[in-house]
Structures are given as C-alpha cells and as structure tokens.
Image 1 (spheres, rainbow, N blue to C red):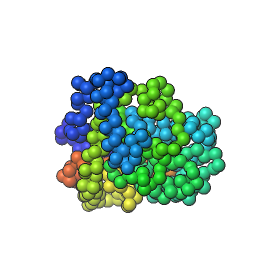
Image 2 (cartoon, rainbow, N blue to C red):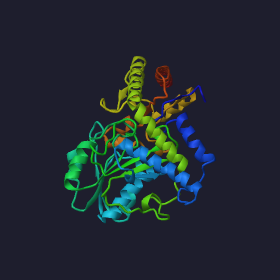
Image 3 (cartoon, helix red, strand yellow):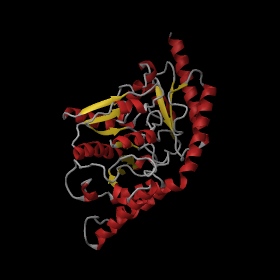
Image 4 (spheres, rainbow, N blue to C red):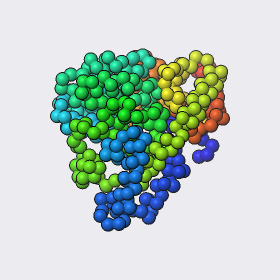
Length: 383
C-alpha cells in the first residue's frame, strides 16, 4: 500500500531493509539449534552471542546481563515475576500509566496474593518520584515504572528514581520499549536493575526483544523448560529474530541523533500545519515529551469516527496503545492523568518515524483538518 501514510509507529515500525538482510541467512541456510553441539548448531550459537555482545555494548552492560525474549510483553512479565520469585518478597510498586503488559501481570500477582501499589500520574502524565518512594514498603520486592509512555510520550524521571531506589536497595524495572532508540541508555550511569525492550519498535521484527538484568539482581524464571539464556528464559532461541534485533540496535548506535532531529521536525511541521487548518485542537502530550509521539484532543469528535475516516483517506493513526485495539474502553493513561471522559474519547495518537517524510506529515495534517471540518459541518446540518 505505497500511497498510504503510516503514522502509527509507536504501535510498530516498518522492518528496515538492513535488518531483513541480516536475518535472511538464519531463516534459510543457517538453521541450526544454538543448543546443539555440532557445527551447524554452533554457527547459530555464535550468531546469538555476537548479537548479545552488540546489545550489551549499546547499553554499556555485560553480555551476561542480556537475556533475549520474544518481545517487550514477555520481558515485562519475566522481570516482574522473576524478581519476586527470586527475592521472595510479596509487594510491587508500579504506576497507573504503565503498559498493559505490566498492569495485567500485576493483576495476576494480586490474584495470587501479592500486594500491588498503583501510583497515579500528575496532570502532565509524569509520575512524581516522591510518590513512588512513599509507596515502597519493607516487603517491596520491585518497583516498575516505564521510561516513555507509549500513549502520550511523557518521559518519566528514571535516573532520579533509579538512584533513590538504589540507595535503599529496592530493584527498579523499567519498561524501556519506547525509550530504546529515543533516549541514550547507559546502565553504568543509571542504576536500573532491569530493562525491557522490543524489536519491532526499533525497525526490527515482531517476536524479538530483550531483558537486561543487572548482575546481582534477585531473579528466578517462572518459564520452565530448557536451560537456554542461562536458565533465565527457557525455549529455543529465535536466532533470526535475535540477529535482526541486534542489527536494529547497531543501526541505533549510528543513527539515533539524526533520527531524533528528523522526527522532531516531523512533529513540529505536523502540529503547525494542523493548528493552521483546525481550530480548537489541543495537546495531551507534554511539551517536553519525546518527539515521536503526539497525542491530541479534537473537541466534539469521537476518536473512533475520526480514525475510520482517516483510514479510508489513507492515513494510519491510533486511539492509543496497540494492545487495546478493538476495545471500546477509554485510555487508562489519559484517565490516570485526570482528563475528562469526553476528552479521552475524543483523543488520538499520531506517532512518527525516520521513515516518514515532511510531505507526508503535512498532507496528513491537512487531511485531519479537512475531515474534522466535514464532520462538524455535517453535525451542524443535522441540528
């Protein structure tokens, strides 16, 4: 669909040509099982370990601290359950704006008798560090706070929180799915205990990801089977996906700053063009949020109606997290920020990537303005 304008990159990004090329041999010819001792298997093992080194270098971590997973959701689940099993503590602190991969895992833990404290967000979508620390108890085994919110682009104060929790010896898990590729991540400077990543958010393939586990963090995997990933994630490794994830990370190291400059310009041009053509539109995203996510409110127009009209016009956007697709429930993130339900139901998200052009975002903004004006005119006529 070459004529379509894709502005839902927070949900998934297109697979980079370089990533697909790196993966291709391991999908066709180099098919060995990395756990096998023969030469065919060891070629695959070498590829996995080289990928692990690439990811570790990007994070300034040790390769032994990198665990490959099937994506961000699995990484989040393994982080929460693994630390609680390893520490044998019975309490978690998280926030109300987390991805459902964290929130639904916490709900499961509550069903199993664990305690969970949910810290609210402030009006700008940022969580207060003092509020998180106030929720910590002697039996708290883990604090879990995302770095960049996937619906609003709000950046959480992770370095400050990580330092405070390190001083009192409480592990911090960070869902860094949206942060990888946008923010510099150095585990030597920011003392997080665990980080979750997903390949398809950084131009890699779906079904790939990683979990960083700092050495010394209590951890026992709930996933049983083989001894892969040093007994931290059972199951035969997805060699092609791992190689592709590492290639995507390698490209980040070369291009991150240039990508961010380009995406910042895209967001600015989109917002400027939209304001010129459409009165009353407002931002839900904070002014100091990341450049690739823009959540906005269009008064009087339900997001579902606008998204359908945009899709028919060839523009892909979303009402929030891709993991809630098909749901009629309003965004839990916007509600947690204290926004009224009418505003929540009239809000939608545009998310940009380095693969988008200025011409595309300008055209998309004009389409949004035109469609909204048509809907408003029709509503006035029906009155």
